[in-house]
Length: 258
Image (cartoon, rainbow, N blue to C red; front, side, top):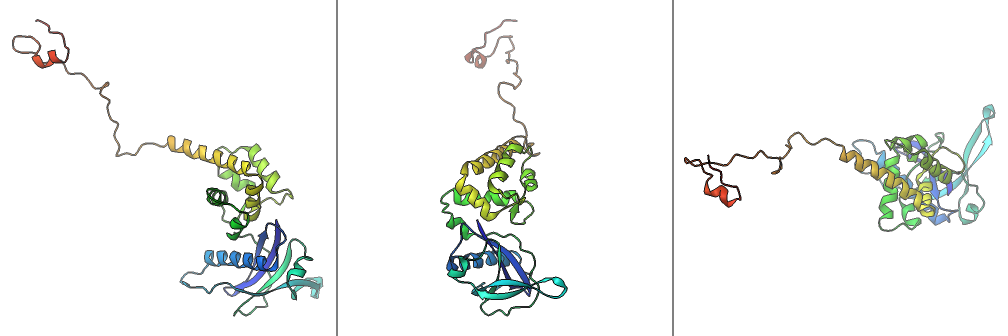
């Protein structure tokens, strides 16, 4: 996964999102991923009462370069414009600034990057059919804190009886650099390269859900039905003479005399 940190002005403040791609992207591809990431976050964090938000559109991208300023602190500034040639030079984890159409850029400080969800990556990795729904769905099931990332803790909390070996297998494969979390992009990469691990998690989670549903108590309004075999048998009716009535003879009951 190739990651670029993207800062932009949204709702009057500076945001900084971690935008992922399966590999080093071309400029047009990167712009599409950035727009998809910010549209998701804008819809997620839209202020109450603000029904309509203009579509997030990129005007151009600029590489943020740093130099030492007052107090020996690094100061970032918008530098060279990003294009296909520059994308071949920048390192994984580079910081860029997103200039938008019709939006003035503020001078506020760039915050630390945070993870996000880029739905366009589902198509980029080529998931189809059931996998296109199952793999993203499991990511949100295990992202219990809503941080667009999965940690060992949140993955364990998703299970009543977590399997330590399976969880270690997940993180040793999807988090080789020991960052301590799995992003949406690295989760999709895991699903594309090692789908059996995703299926193992899904099977374990589904079994717990089924067992939990089987142990659930019955609703109070539902009453236990009595089977015919368990129902008490009524004694056969006898006539005044003491013999069993004809109706019981038809049912195979032996006639008894008093």
